[in-house]
Length: 631
Image (cartoon, rainbow, N blue to C red; front, side, top):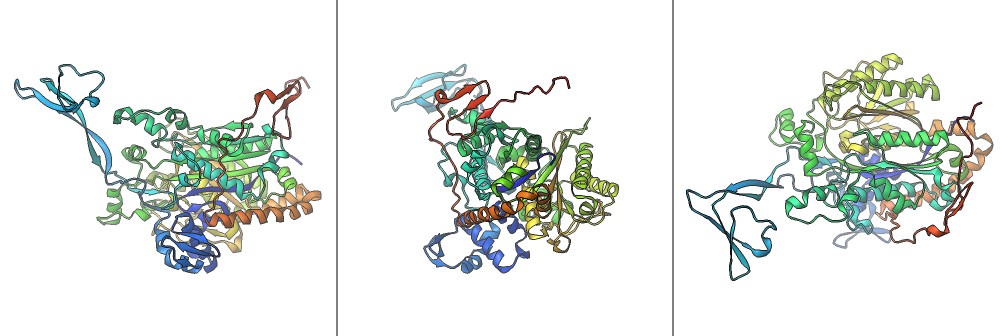
C-alpha cells in the first residue's frame, strides 16, 4: 500500500475572524457570499463568542436580559460583530497612550543642595553616592545631595502602527478555564488544541486505545515566546518597573510551552514532543515534522499547530522600527487622508506599506490514513508533503531569497505526482504568504509567475489570508491552511477585499488575484498550496489535497474496509456536529486537566521488550531490529 498518508481528521483554533472549527472563521471571511441561513449562523455564533448574547433555552438573550431569536441577533448585532472582528484598531491596550519611562536628571545649581522626600520604604537598598538621609517624623525620609540624580518618570508614547488582527472583541480566552498566571499565548494554545480535538467527533480515549503511547506526537511552538506580563514580558520588565519577578514568568515564557501545555494539560500524553520554530513559517515547520513522522510510521496521531499572542507594544515597536509594519502615517499617505483606515491596513499585492501584526492559535489533528479508516474519522484533507528551504547568502535578515523557489516548485512537482497534471493545472490554487509589504508583492508574484510558466499553469487563483486577519507570525500558515479547508467545503476562494486594485509591479501574466470572493464551484479545487516566507530565510510550502480527491484515494487504498468506514463516519460526524452546535453557543468545552492524578512511577513496568504505563491500554515497544545490519 506504500507509505502512510497523513490526513486531517480535525482542526480548530481562533483568530481575528473567529473560531476555526466548523469553518466559522472562514465563513466570516466570505460572509457576503454566503446564503442568508449561513450568514445568520455565522453572526449568531460570533455574537455568542463575543459575549454580546448568550443562549437562553431555544432563544438568545442579550446583556440586558432581552429575549431574541437568531434572526434578531443577526440583524441587531451585525454591525457590532463585523466591527469587532478582522483587522481593526488595537483594543488589547491603548495604542495612543502606551506607558513608558522617560529618563531625567536632576542636578543642583551652583553649590545648592537638591532636597526631596520619600517614604522610607521606597528608599533603594543601595543608596546612590552623595545622598544624605534625614529621618522625618511621618515615616518619610528627606534626601539631600549635591550630585546629579537620575530618575525614571512615567510618560506615554503613541505606537506608529495602531492596526492589528486581534481575537474578536469581548472574547477572552482566560474566562473559559482556570487560567491563573497563564500568559495569553498559552491560554490560546489550550483553547485552540481543545477546539481541534472536539472537532474530530472522536473520543480521545478511543484514539489512545488504538495506538501505542509513543505513536502520538505533539508538534507546537511559538516563534516569539510568551511576551505578555505572565511570561517573558514580565520577566524582562519587572525589575525595571519596580515590580517583583515571579517564579512562573521564566518557565511559562519558553517558546516550547504550547507543546508542553498540550501534552500535560490537554492530552496527558507521554508521546513524542517537538517544538520547532522557523520565524513566520513556523506552522509549516511543525507540520513538516508531523508529516515526516506519520509517513515514516513513527507516529500515527499528531497534534500540530501554534499559538502566538504577538500584539504587544514591544513587539509592535520592534517591527515598526524595522520599517516592516503598516504605520498610520504611511497608510494616510497612501490614501491621501489624515485619518488611517485600520480596517484595510493589510493590503497584499496592492500599493502597501507593511504588514499588520496579529494573534492567532491554529491546530490540526493528523492521523495516518489506516487509523482514520479504522476509527471512522471524518477527513478534511490530506497533507502528503511539506518542503522547507533556506535562502543561502543574504543581503539582510528580512530580505526575500531563493529558498522559496525550491520549496514551492518541489511542492508543485509533488502535487503533480500525487493527483496528476490536470488537477494541478486546472483545480489548484495558492494561499500566498501575502505579507502586505512592497518587497513581498514583487518577489512572491514573480516567484508564482515563474513556477506557473515552468508547469504550464494559467489563470492560477491566488489569495492572501493576511488581508483579513493580519500576520500572526508562527500561526500565519495555520490561518492560511484553515481558510484553504474552507474553500474545499464551500468552493469559494476568499477575495483580497482590502484592496481596490493590484499594484502595477505585481506580475499577473499567469495568475489571478481576485478582489472579490471567487466562486470555483464549476472547477472544484483539488489542491491548495500554502506558501510562507519567514525572516532569516525560512521558506516553506505545503501541499494540501481536498477531501474529494482524498476520499477517492482512501477508497482505492482501503477498498475492503471502505464501506465499513463510511458507516462509522456517520457516527463521527454526528458527534462533531453536536460539538459545533455547543461551540456556536460559546460552550467551548475547554480541556484543562490540571490537578488530575499523576502517573505513579512505581507502577511503571519495565521489560527488555518495552514499557508499560498505568492508564494506557497499550505498551511502548522497543524496536529490536538493527537498521545498519549488513544486508
